[in-house]
Length: 144
Image 1 (cartoon, one colour):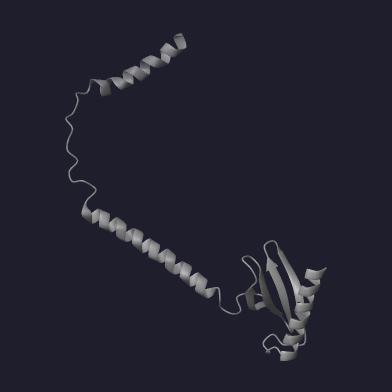
Image 2: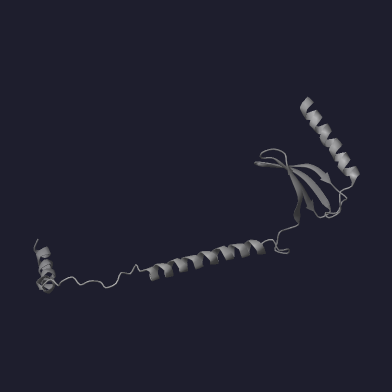
């Protein structure tokens, strides 16, 4: 107990001038910091930052579609919706076209179209052949 009293007295004695000082009257602060000018400056700064963020997002999105930015060799040539969550998509990889079925959690190759360039139009024979094969597959799937 004597150790705590030894440290208590110097602390109390050093606080004496603060405790002995008379209370000062409260002075008014002057003008309020929430004036119309400061609010307009703050809103203008916020608007400027938001416009800058949206402009940069637009620029990044716009530059992401430029050729030669590392998109890879696979291109999506087209697709069609087969249901609420299923799609058939035609992909081009070098000289090969792939018809793939895309469903949640699964991608499956449905047909490989070889011998056509990625930019060459499809011949009528291949389309009719594919349609015939697809119809056969659908029939055997229903019957079997």
